[in-house]
Image (tube, rainbow, N blue to C red; front, side, top):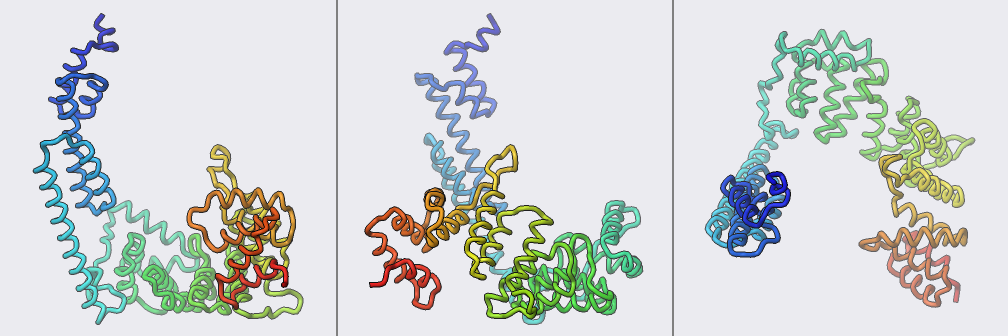
Length: 443
């Protein structure tokens, strides 16, 4: 009978268990024990349990405020208010007072940090002093001979360098290794200070300075460092998982020097840079440049590079979308549609098979738009449009245009009026206006 009473307790037994859970501070268990029971004794346990849970949430709000988790503070306050059964008004008031105090202290600290950074920036353009770093005597990690973890990290760093340069990393000793370790530990400011004290003639020194500059958002200094590295090292090199030529080309493209980026990539044809080359060539075409070869257009070279990437790394939706854009700019609309169909085929919505990568509605929208504009595959276009428009939360111009194309394909008499209104929403020189006007019959 004892076991049966545990699984099928009487009302009195449930009340007793609820009271015991209250005494132990197990608020949730106490509430669960009296779930569905009527009576003043059950109501009392419920009120006390809910108030206990409310107090836990008030403390959680304070804890999150102190740790900077502001988004969780409001959640716990709201939950505490929902649970409150009365009697904790003073505790709620005290909690809100503490939260205001924490916010005020953080605002004062933020203002002090900004003021310190502004003062430091006058003499320290990289902001190193503002980061709390001692400019004259940077403290690097202590490399104790008994510290096996640091020894292993040091060995891994050296192993990543090209074989011809590893000896120099060892020769430069603690100052260099300590600087690299500081960078790896998320302190590029500290690392850069130490590296600036090392010889400019060392390839690895200028390379690591470039890495610091990239992290500190100084692309022009990083470009200078990577160029210096190539000169000192006898050419660009693979370091770890990155090639310095690809790093340089990416930075040049980022600063707007597309021709310089293109030149670096073509002079250093390496696996892994095909997509970047395609992007640079495509951007150069859109900027108005022409290709220097008589045998191949700039866009054709971009497409060839991208197809090489797809063959090497596999079918990825984003690569096919870029391929479609390149083909469209070249006037090859049907091949562009095929690229978008391939992008959809490369997606997968089966978690057990591929980790779940559903098709992007924007791909469906682009493909449906092309089909409608060219009067091809109307049934397929309607299916794609239905899927794409069903997932729209805030309609863009492209979504509205697609909606009008659906009306046109369905023979709706209002379609031309809607298309005319859409065309008038963009400036006369906008290419989108010309796209729409081609579909409106001349009057």
